[in-house]
Length: 244
Image: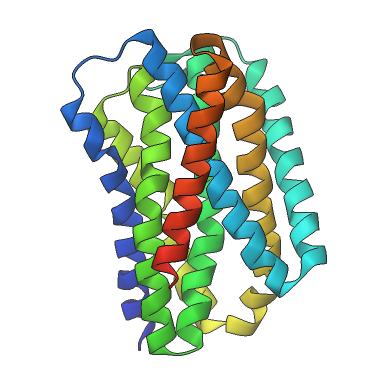
């Protein structure tokens, strides 16, 4: 297994993220309440993914995992405050609060991909069979993550192709970091729990501080709660299936 092979496998995981935008090709119009539904589903998918990251990181090192989670929350809070004071913030077609939310979600998911890229490289460092299994698992897992990004972008006016492109963009750290992680397994393995905690903390903060409060504005709380819980359960069940 060469470093170039590792790069190609990790690139497949990144491209798979764009598949999450496909359902929106069949949706022509989106009433306002769809934004609430979308926020609830995205929050649930991100929370479910975060639970999986925390569970995986706990097996490596609980302390470094906790430190990473706190740093992740601090990073997102600081970024929100920094961007919020910028007048006329834009994210392609989106403006103001919508642009801020879209930018933060794409940023959070991109950060999350860092740990997945390291995971792919470290897995291949442990053997080709393990590496292939982890690659397939992450590629399949990336599809609902791409869906989570599209659920934030498309209902706010972004086109489906661009939502797919931003989804793939958010996963580009995977092929970029898989190679150095493969070549320097021991060094990157030390920092993996910190990265897992960072991504989990950032995603959970976004889910509970941004997506769910906005969902409650457009949809009844009982409906939001039901969608949120079902989405978490679906993501956790999905993770259980692909990890065997």
